Image (cartoon, rainbow, N blue to C red):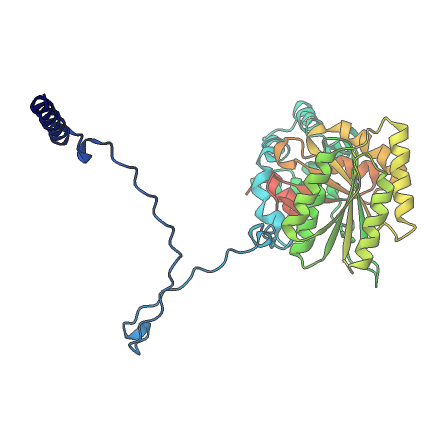
Length: 393
């Protein structure tokens, strides 16, 4: 019995050893396990290299690492608009005379062709009269011109082309009245700046004319303050601000819908404070048929005069409106004592005769003319340059 138990123990030990050997033989190996994720790299602090200790500078081949300069502050990134330097007013109309090409087709060349005919009978004189009226010379000035031309033609008899041209040139100049004082009163009076009030109906170009006039005066070396008294149109105020920014002129503006007289008063006060030469007040466009609005314009002028005298009242007229512009001019003249006319869009009309009619009806000279849409297309009116442009070379 004891021998039998000994055999069983031996067999059991052998079996255990055999199972252990098999397990060691077939156990999973490390290469069969999925790889562990790599550890993230540790962040490294930036290293600033020091110059090599060789005694050599950059000129001698040494190496230096320089940090980039700090970013500029935000205020420096927002640049102010670049100030422009406009050309002076002298000679502007001569440079722009080609813009009158449309007007010369009717008023100038048309009359030259009619007056150059061999025989001037009543029918031709009727054509001459019709041409003048069509060009907005006006009925009364037209009759005066035709009568004077008929008399001179009879005296001349035979007429050469040069004689006809001189005849017409002299007559047009007489009607335009070259002796009228066309001085634009924009010079300061001691400590007080000159004040220019710009008036007119909607759409004639008052705000643009105000901005262009500022350029003319700055180009002549003056210091200008603009008053945005057209408080009913936010676009007009913004537009005037743009004009002022371009030439470095100060702009006084008020709240939308605010009191225009208050803005005008503040603009004059700023002009005095800044020692400006000229203050230009842009007013709201008024319909000449609206009594209330015209009364308000009179109020603006009276309030300004509490601070300083108004040296110029410029009435802006659109040359393309013809005789309707004449009716506007008459009503404005009654309210604010217009001292001069700024005639815009003269380059876009065949009715250049309005220069003659508006002066004759109002007794007020045309002082400025707009001859294009460019910023420097406003020019002091020169009668001789105007007539020569109408008649062509």
